Image (cartoon, rainbow, N blue to C red; front, top):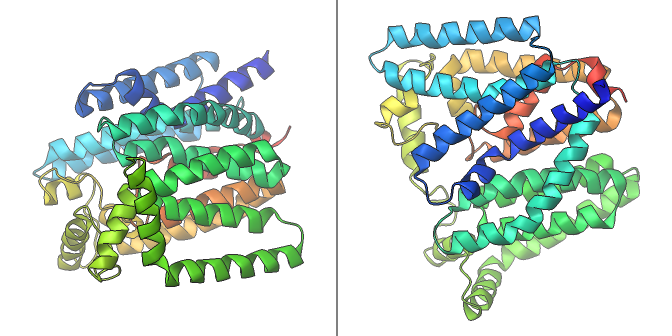
Length: 387
């Protein structure tokens, strides 16, 4: 009976990873605010199912964390003149945390089962990818919406390919990588490619092969960089001939033609939010600002500063951020004792993936990879890693 519950928990957690892209396509045409509410509702439903399966029991440490977290949110709201922003962020994060943290803290959670069902969902999602790209071409999805489907696929296929040395996951991985390079964000594509390289290096048993591949990748990367303008123009011409648009290559071509590839690398108004966050932190001597601060500073235009260090510094201050990273390192050290080698390697690469992506990407408090890692590092049990 417990084995069946383990599988249900694995399915629920795998579904949670893809809850945003699934909601977008199931409720196509609905405004984004309503979509967000539906996502929160579905997250709560997943939690309720998991809670019921676990006989309405909850891990004591997790329960204390939830109570402490909610106390901080409401206390924060009382101290500032923008309580609505504080409650919007704080409660939204809480709902997002609920399902993964509860499932992973349970004795029913099995890491390998979770990976298996994540892989199975990834296969289904790869076949759905064409629909997402078509809807993106019609202007119904953004590049970020497509990335929410592609990135979890690349992570799981890269892991299974490296672990099993199998052709099928490699084919699925390649399909998603190509889609990421052309139609996801530039940082999405870059972090995905680096992560696949890390998977190979971490899981390869031959030092000679590692050195050879590093040499090849370095040489090819240098050649691509030297001839980047010509390569982008060739690819854009190819895509144009087939009436296909690629935001990534169009932006890169425009930056190169204006000779500002590095001087204006951050687009989509991110320079604005970076400067706003830095100015605020400098004025406060890098002391914490708490929940909702970036919404308040940008009049609700941004909900996170698109940079991991800035985001954590806004919430915890610079010293709190340093302490947080030290705790994460210690938790990783402890996890190495609890998990098997291949499981630990996967979680290390997953952490590096998010670290790279987060330099100009998704929020630490809403992205699947960072939340999975937080849940596993702080609430998982040794039983989760034993078959």
